[in-house]
Amino acid sequence: MQRDINKLSAQPFDLLVCGGGIYGAWVAYDAALRGLSVAIVDKGDWAGGTSSASSKLIHGGLRYLETFDFALVKKSLIERQMLLHTAPHRVWPLRFGIPIYKNNRLGSFKINIGLALYDFLAGKTPESQRRQSLTKDELLQHFPHLKPAELLSGFTYFDAQCDDARFVLELIYGAYLSGAACANYCAVIEFIEPSGVVAGAVLQDRLTGESFTVSAKQVVDTTGRWSQTCRRRQNGARLTKGVHLVMPNVLINEALLLTAQADGRIFFMIPWYGRTLLGTTDTDFNGDIDHVTVTDSDIQYLLTETNRVLAEVNWSERDIIGHFAGIRVLQESDKSNPSQLSRDWLLMQEPNGLIVSIGGKLTSAREDASRIVDCVCTRLDIKTPSQTVGRPLPWLMDINYRQLLDDAEKTGRQLGIHPTDTEILVKRHGQRVNDLFTLCRANLSLTQRIIPDLPFILADLVFCAQQEMVIHLDDLLRRRVPLLILAKLTEAELIRLAQLAGQALGWDRQRIGEEIEHCRIK
Image 1 (cartoon, helix red, strand yellow):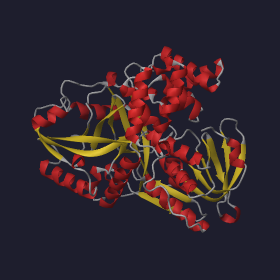
Image 2 (cartoon, helix red, strand yellow):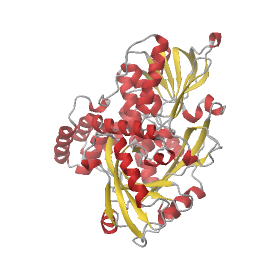
Image 3 (cartoon, helix red, strand yellow):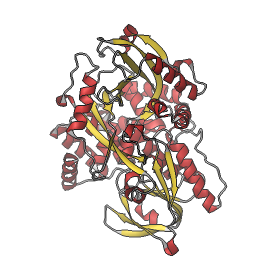
Image 4 (spheres, helix red, strand yellow):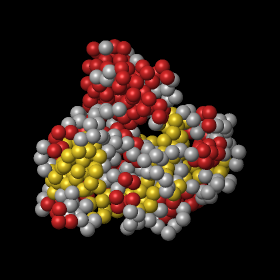
């Protein structure tokens, strides 16, 4: 998948999608599968905003039951089940534990009722995906780092997780294969509105500074917090910030749902690539949308609340490996607590014909995107329905996942790759794992881990640099292979990785130095 900016100005399009997060990616993929001529652009990298700053969960949203968002939970759980079936390389089962302490805001009875409703809304699922009630001792076997004092009992329930940035990238790849023109680092300067109706946009290639015009019969805005509609704060857009800390691994293979004592909010501890994701916060945001930071108060909130329930760990700022922050676009409400705001999605149609996506969730983005494309097709008098329901994702088309995994593990052993690393390769690349094995056969040094305690090998880094529209080192080390948030890279390690990327991308010494400096700043 290569960036071809010239393709954007070579023809008029049926649809121009502005914004390359999860919603834009699903819209472009869905529309391209229906036979529309599609262009999708983003002013930064694919998933460069909120879509790479999520909790990495594919879930119904258990906490939304408290606000009676039953329809949203049901919709999300249906999508979760479909993705588990059609994209097992991309969406992985994950059980969550809920400890019940004496001072819990919600007691055992209410939690059990909520979990029963959660299972009911998920529909017919295997017994292994149903809630389980555990005694105190049983819960401590699952989560030995929990404080036993005042712990009464607990539950576990079923959900799933993913790598959000790679989810977006795979959909962009699918749109690309289906004929879409895809360009990151291509900004929308202004919409073209002859006779007051949007008919395209003036775009700027941020690599060259060149501006050009793209004509499109329909334009969809999926830029999230950068949307003009959101910035005008009309029709109910409200921004909230979510922060995650990356901490050492203290979990086995299950996550925790916890309740903050300070304000009763829900937050998670989630195993991810050998680390623990801790978050998220949920606070109103009124700052610079281009510079979202993790503050000292964000950090202290999460560390304090986590240390209340973890025995002997006693995390401090010194233990933080990395962190990231994202901005949610939510529907406006008079509720003061952001956690009580609806996470449901809103489709808006501006008077000038612009279609705008507001809010939504990573989990339910596919269905919402199909409704956006339905709207586009209605305007274009196209009758083709969505092709994404139950369709395997592009990197697992017509392939049996279990067989792919078994074959990959066999090949990995022959090449000397650790089985854990091979499984991660398959989850990250699907059937393209064989292309990475080809790189390894040509250069066995690429079978080595990039960082000793993280499950990524050098071939992964090289392949991503060569094949996944990487423009900057930050794209490669934050979203393609998320080393900048999962490891405290030394100066020597950063230089080594930049040189390796430079070899794959044809960078000279000056460019390598500039990219290293850019990573330091970010």
